[in-house]
Image (cartoon, rainbow, N blue to C red; front, side, top):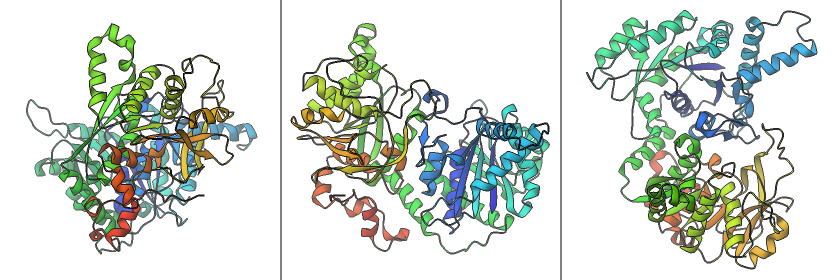
Length: 579
């Protein structure tokens, strides 16, 4: 097993997750099996109870694990399936050690950070690195480990010490350290400054780790003189200083690393047998990135949510939209709308924000209402859903968005009274038995589930989904379907209504699960692909062609696929057959 530790310096949020994912991608393109582990030094057990404004979205894995959004990047870039144990936190480590102490595993010894906590970290990494993450169930050969935060943070010290010891246990030829640092460029002088990176590397070396590669985040390409300066003061060769400047798309980052010889260096440093033949996977990435830069047609989607001030709150949603837009050769424009601004109360308090929000909504080609929690802003979402239904605008509701679509239809078509926060004669949305209002962490229905389609003429059909919450009351199903509001997908027991569609509408779909978690750059999520197709006016043509995109909307067989049609089939909505 080869271990690649990715650390960060100067500031957090510098792009360690994308760089770790990109390193894994270029190694996987060489035919290696790659897994990834994210270490978060916070004391929380997992990310499930975080506010979206704290760390962005909570990514949900197949096994129901609620984890950091960087694991979403790993899954999307590497096309792998991770588990909850691929996200290691201080809370999990301390909980594990304390449980061992309570069982008497330490035989009365004084339990300390060194060696007990550091040993637990190393044991966790070694065990998890061996877990297969690809469909072929082959044990990984390379484990990319991202250490969250910044070198020097007090909460990350036990992890730094653990890896200081770890490098000697697994031997030098099996361990290397990539350090990601910032090269600021003050506008006053325009000069690229190396001092923050020098200080960061000095601190890392003082803690016992010497970086093998220094990846420099900068706004423009690194000048040769700057690279030589970093080489001299940070005790590395110039070839070990890698420039990661801003690019048009994050999918260009693997290509950027490849072009600077990262694969060759890692092959020599870790003694990995890597073939030098052209890599088809990277060819496909290059073609995808080139297409992204050449797109001329635009498609705008109004994202009506509660956490729109921080785009990472909807990271996977945005990625799923981007994947689908790229699949149909359109440039995506996301219009973020705070749902509270659509409510009549805002018209009285701040008319400008109210009219701006409605102008954005009305000018969008399609409308997306994603998941969320709490009552704030729900009335605004219902107003947006009502407008999409009446104006026949393409609409996709996810989780809470699907539930509110049910409430909107019940209120405005069936004439049922009440709001989302008060009991009425009819309960359209009910609590699930898994939900525990007294215990916040991990009490929802989480993970990969199966949904059964109950009709042959549904636009949307897919087998496996992730992350469901409050279901629609099945006792009221007939009232909706009499008016053309169809529940086309249910869980295997037939108790939870999980997919809805509206008759006589270009695209009005709601899903109880979160399809964005399974979207991939070259395999977009079907519900999101349907929304983009409908918003671009292409859905009917797509369905008439047997759910196939036109050749110009696909990748050529230069990417390594046997024929263009085999690549088209990857973008195909599942066929309409009974399960």
